[in-house]
Length: 172
Image 1 (tube, rainbow, N blue to C red):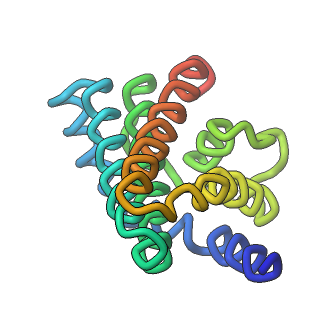
Image 2 (cartoon, rainbow, N blue to C red):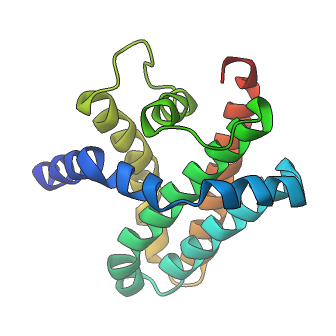
């Protein structure tokens, strides 16, 4: 199981993060922040993340096994959207490169940004994100309560990322 997790982290780091990043409409994020304001935009992302957490956890083991990969992808997507939104809010630039973006993501999960952006740093970030989710996964086994827990954990995770980024806004 540990080898499978390690392989999953490696796959996510090697191409998954960049694929997710490339699918995000940065202009759409700019428009969303301009229209709603940063706090409402962050809250919307947290609610989207909570939604997949609820769906994944509500059916117990069955939906957890099928839904967890989709939940992880959605959670990472929402984290990336929040990161781009806060970066835009503080810098006025809505279009940034993946390398520049990943430095911000790495700092939001307290990864060492002094290291060069490399596969190892990406693996560290992937591991921290997924381990945070994995530690709560066993609690999602209980139907209904698992949905509430899953949704709450995802919501609080996105809000926590936003707060961490906001506190470092001068460094973006």
